Image (cartoon, rainbow, N blue to C red):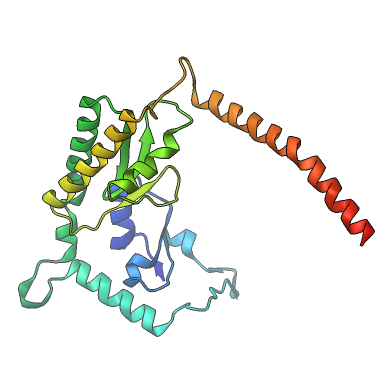
Length: 235
């Protein structure tokens, strides 16, 4: 799908980030979950042929390229986004308008609570997608995921851990998650695992772990390789 510079999709992306982008891309959300990619940009950047050689066309190919099911789903979603729904329901875009402020308030309150409790963990977020960060360098920070799991919260494997919330979450739902998050961090502190060596930095810890890993690989890598080689030679 190609959008011109005056399209609503490109304008919304620029409004959210506060930039006037030359080109933007979108994923499967605009297709209602169907596999699709969308590129939007200024008209001169999106032109697929040269004016002096109009037959020299840049073709867009792909398994789902212009697939009728995908195009129909995308049309229905984008129309529902901007136009009133059945029985006079407000357009979906109006419901999205307050999401950023709502989630910023929720995560802001969680971070303030963690700061009051002097717990070295924070959450950075983009609307309802949050990433766990740590304010104190420690080689044991990775253990936090297990304390969270013990309190009923499972992090994804991405980065230092990610929490993706449904927009249907109420304030009470989020408060329950925040209680478990703080309880897990408190339990990890009680176990002594927020420990950090005085003056340590993340760079120091990375170098230390890399050296230990290298020593371990070198120390146990030689003999098994020789044993394997002699066994193969004698077979």
